[in-house]
Amino acid sequence: MTESAQDGEYDAWLDSIESDNGYYLECSNGHGWLPPRRVCPRCHDQDLSEVDLPESGEIASHTTITVPTPQFEDDAPYVTAIADFGPVSVTGLVRDVDPDDVSIGDVVGLDVGERVTTGERAVVFRPR
Amino acid sequence: MSDPRIAGASVTHFGKHPERTGRDLFAEAGLEALSQAGIDPDDAEALYYGNFMGELAEHQGHQGPLMAEAIGLDVPATRVEAACASAGTAVREAVKTIRNGEAEVVVVGGAERMTNIGTAAATDALAIAADDLYEVRAGMTFPGAYALMARSYFDQYGGSHEDLAHIAVKNHEHALVNEHAQIQKEITVEDATEAPTIASPLGLYDSCPITDGAAAAVLTTESYAEERDLDAPVAITGTGQGGDNLALQDRPHLAQTPAADKAADEAYEDAGVGPDDVDFAEVHDCFTIAEVFAIESLGFYERGEGIAAARNGETTRDGDRPINLSGGLKAKGHPVGATGVAQLATVAWLLDGSHPRADAVPDSTVGVAHNAGGTVASTTVHIMEVRE
Image: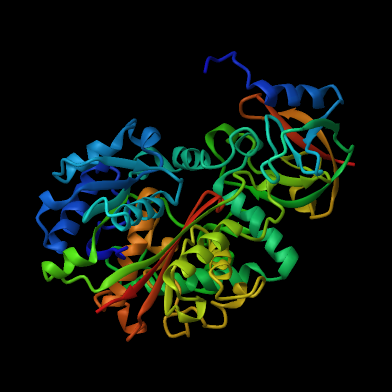
């Protein structure tokens, strides 16, 4: 992988969130996934369509990480959470809230931010 | 179909051996296992070898033939990678090879060199078992991933960090007599609850250490063992493997491990036994909460009830069904690619009475090894029984 090569559908998905057109992929049976996907791993349906992501989701679980990988050295301590957006869940960094104040059930919106350590793009959640 | 016998097994000391190469660690375990088996090494027909992060820790891929050579074998050698379940998965391949009649003697093992690259780089290396695009880039570490699962468990079923502390205390106590263990130090519940946080709600004593080490075992057919009068009373009578979505975000539940459910169901059916028949188990407690998931998936406890098992003394060495008499990954250590075979060896030694904690399970006949990879996206379960 060269420095400039993008990760196809993943980076395109981040682009869509940055331009407020975030989506997920849904199969005929309503199972939601994030790209790239060619088939629903749950029901094998290959008819996946892009559906608008809900504007907000709820935090399903969260952790404040104090021992990071080197790529997040200057980010620590930081909160990583999984947020439930209905048919699809997303993993991201919780921003704009004190780590001690994050709770399961908190309503958050999806955004693209930057890692403090590397400046690379990252999925972030902000309170709604 | 012949259930493989465990003719010999060996583990190195698990601990900090940063200067020791992976090939030397494996050579120690492999040669000792062959010696214990008392077989002609020329009879060995295959090697299945578990290793996870050799490219990152030692800049070494293609380890199958390297490790066969290290133990003096000229056999087809296959490296198996399933993150922390690499060695358990290698065991399963060895079992299938023997059962299929393709070989009479198979060596299975694994090794991992980890401490030579330091804690930060090892944390980074371990993280590649998660989904790189959707988890690692969102800051997920392995303690972080299990922390998400632990918090979800507490939210859905109840339980507390203090319950997890009892698991750490138990496993540390179990390891006190295990000379192979990385940590032989008694701790208290207060030590565990007051330790520095790694990824909330998990602290230092909820996490297994970073470990260098290797393990190996020699498996043979029943007829090979009988014809040569080998001392091999323990058979692998059931094998199971299950999978799950790699990323936590794609699973319906954050506080269940269906890959382990599937592996356990398959292994029990294969062996013709059930959870109530099991005398003890070695399970994959990379984090304290992982032991809870394991004992629930193995059918020893209903969902939401495994959290109290250690606190209630049910899984301690004087409990009804001891869990992790070796000290588990928590205290014994977790050289990732070796762990599944080290569990196999431990169960065999507990069943044949040669393990220092065998006095906790006298007259036991059925033991289980549960080896999990990633956030339990891969799991193997093996049932072992005394046959003679």
